[in-house]
Amino acid sequence: MTAWMFARHPRQVFYGWWVTLAGTGLAAYTDGIGFWGFTNFFAAIVRHFGWPQAIAAIGPSLHRLESGIAAPITGAMVDRYGARKVLVIGYIAAGCGCILMSQIENLWQYYGSFIILAFGLSAGAFTVTSAAINAWFRRYRGRANGIMLVGPGLSGVLSGFWALVIPEFGWRTVLFAAGIGFWVVGMLLIPLIRNRPEAYGMEPDGGPAPESETAPTARSSVLPDANYALRDVLRSRGYWQFVIASSLLGASWSVITFEALMLSENGLTDRAIALVFIWQTSSSIPIRVVAGTVADYIDKRVVLAVAIIVQGVAIVLFPLATELWIAMIAGFLLGSAIGSQSSVRLALQAEYWGLAIFGRVVGIQQGLASIPSIIAPFAIGWLYDQTGSYLVGFMIVAAVLSISLPLTLTMTRPKSTTADGVRLATT
Image (cartoon, rainbow, N blue to C red; front, side):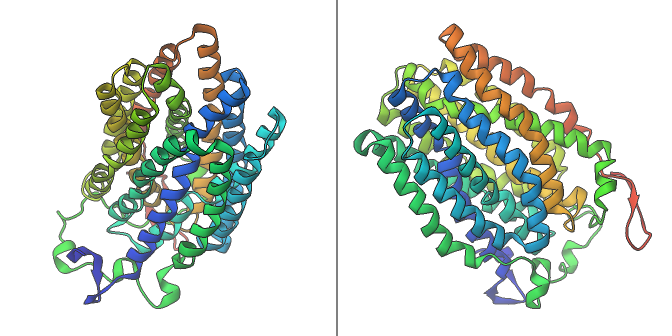
């Protein structure tokens, strides 16, 4: 343990860090199946049934559609009931979705199980956990979110594990076991999540900042606490820039769905593909923490923009990965970029639009951002069916992603008043 994890007493770890570590474990499992890991199940299901990729990709598109519809509801539930209760619902539903998908015999069952799984993944996502983490921290929000997002980095180990065991035991058996795993992991870790420190007689960060951290030049990137009404946020140009940029980012992540099929087509063996999956997220773990920490000191918009550029390079490089070393480079860049974006975006949302409406703001953003994500998997699959190559689809995704750069760099806070009538300046 390092010194910054302690509060109140040098021998006592501030409970907010335990919330963060529990969130790390939950994010590792959720992303190990629903995000980084699902590409293995998708590849196995496509091969088993022989469906065209455009048709099979409607499943992930339905996932994003249902997640988009559920996200505002989930966000409102987080604000009303707290993150822990929402996580319980999410993990129960995600487990049911995996088990049902392991039993499918036709396309409609495949789509139907995706809808259940999508709701579970939305309610059990790290964005829900982040609502609790952001309540426990202010000065260290970027760092805490960065540590929590080590979880998706560790999820690459699960993704590599699926790549090895699916050929051995079959995708049905492995997917059924993964569904049971949701329930086991949830029972172990969700009870550690607590919603706000004030309910337990504590303060964010464990107490006021030491005098050395309150100097005018220290932590200059931390803005005053936001206290906006939802209507003020929805009238803000900066918020809608964030929504559009997030939409483009979410659409670009659809390339991961096709990663296992693409690398196999490029000539990589199952073992090599497993190694890429493990590497692309685990190698990015230090970058995730560093990005979150850097965002505590400099403008979060700049950190996010750099991550977007790195992701664009990775997307272009992946279809060219006919050798393992190229795939490893592309995997490192993609994992580092997505991991960095996630920690910084969560901290930025809390800093720019506040905590009182955090769940609703995130839910609306995720709901609207799902629209391009619904189109992207089908479009990439359709282009592959027409051309026999992933290169064209991936190049288009990278070009569209570049639009998010100016939107990110010019985002501003709303200009409004707090409940006490204090004017909040746009930053």
